[in-house]
Image 1 (cartoon, one colour):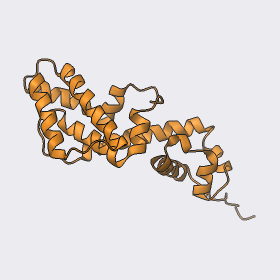
Image 2 (cartoon, one colour; image 1 turned 90 degrees about the horizontal axis):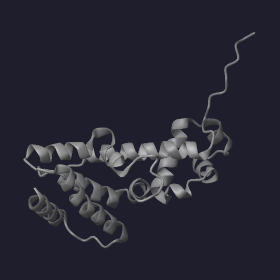
Image 3 (cartoon, rainbow, N blue to C red; image 1 turned 180 degrees about the horizontal axis):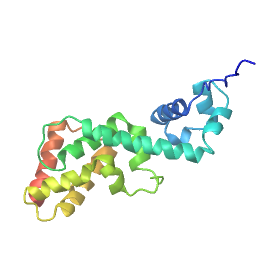
Length: 185
């Protein structure tokens, strides 16, 4: 008897997660359902529930992918600014512009995946820690307090991006963040 090979799985976990993340970017995670996901993939819902016990398990993985995506975005964001917190601020504001649904998921929803805002921002690359250490190295007496003051402004700017009310250029944003840094350091 010739060995019988198992049927190759045509719908993989990576395919499901990548499609779910793309759907999240388009419509927001609240609109990611098993039926919509299956339709996008071109399958029934059965392969989704073969891979994931329930949608909450999938949502957890989407959330982690979004967090990793922000960390990567911060790391790869190009700016020549040396002043602490400005690079993070620019990356955060531009992430809100370019990935509005992921931004809303991570930074404006009640569902943070059991992570504090600080943990989300700090991410896998230690974004906030890097900026605080940079401020301390420049002689800032209270870099954590400075971060909080700057953060309120940065977060407000990013939220204004989502409503279409933020019309400052990158240079104007850099100047404002630089003024805040100088006034508090």
